[in-house]
Length: 355
View 1 (tube, rainbow, N blue to C red):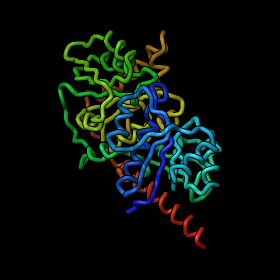
View 2: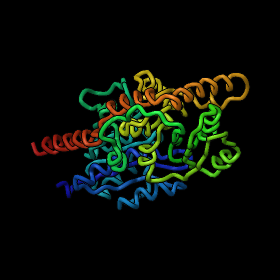
View 3: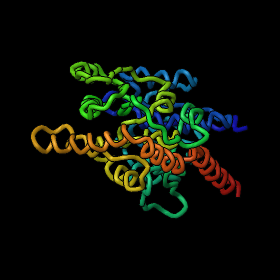
View 4: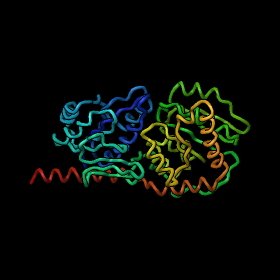
């Protein structure tokens, strides 16, 4: 048991930031909790009730998030932290080095760019990452994908079979808040195929709900908006097709063997998006700005995406092939590998201090 181990998670969540950083930190936190450690979150979780509820249900306390190197070190000392996980695009990158100098083992979760952080370990779970860091300090690729308990519990024993259905169930979600407003755009593209479907859309903000309400499903089509929910893995497992952003949720979809079509919503998803699509783990629908554009260019982008979706809605074999490749790419043991690496680093440091 690791009853004396104290772990901090430094991340933020909000309507514009989204909840991806918090979700993957929660996965790490759950693994540490399962091993008997104490876990605390440092950061801001405002305007996202679902995210705050995720902490509460796990009994993880939330403290204000220091933004400066000195503030991080002070918080680590005040809470007697052995390990601090940093997952942010906004923190001063000097914070990781300051924590290391203070004797706190530091794991920096990154997406293709260390931002100059000097961490004990770097985790880039993106598919095919080519991040360059000092030898022995990089945990790279989908083998280290961070997945929550609820995702692991819903992982099927096998990939989806090839099944033809007259009215496929489709789930569309774009992060915890859909800060970019992707849901109305992709819902319209889905409905434009004319294919019968039961479309469920996760609605993270009132503005998104208002835009969805303007859409009119065609014959055999239904549109059901739902709020963000902790039962999302179950909804994914039940859907015949999932349409989502190419962010943190990509690895959840893969682990669950979900036949998926992805959209590149923001710039920092682009590289991973193209690699995932090239590997055949999901179908690609393009980039959100192009899909949302007015004029002929936008019409062409939406028509191409609709053609891809039409093929998936009509083809059980195509969906099954995506399911098999995706499930094989992510085995669900990533977070255990990450925590093993952190504990090994901590052990080696303690041994060095004794010697």
